[in-house]
Image (cartoon, rainbow, N blue to C red; front, side):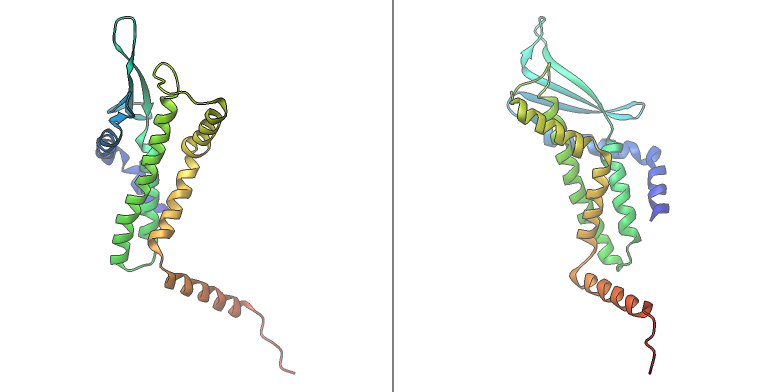
Length: 200
């Protein structure tokens, strides 16, 4: 599993452009309009660790020259999506299940994992639009604290994505019968590990 993950990560210079293009196209489709006042544009970029630029506009706020207020955020779809994708693929490929089940596990696993990526991105945008100079909604100090705490613990924190990917792997790779066989094999292994009883 570790070898497959390392290979997939090493392939980023080759596949990164395709993944960034897919990421930007999907994000622009889902978040091009953010509420009644927000506009968002995802643009491919190559600046250090960042491979995507996010431009956020508040169409109702303009500067002294009459230009729409906007903010630009450097973003990494490699850190926000690809590393979890590679991890999930490696887990599924290493799972001893039939090829057909493995294929369907990959399909459903990638769909579910990218639903998580979409949620992460939505929270990032909510946080961005709650700040100046593009803020277009007000929240109380308590709910601001809840939002920023959630953002730091579950969105910015890179480890949480691996936890989600592991949960998705379990969900799409195993059936109830598999767990029965696993638990029975564990029980059998424990029986074999017990010392033999002496015959009196």
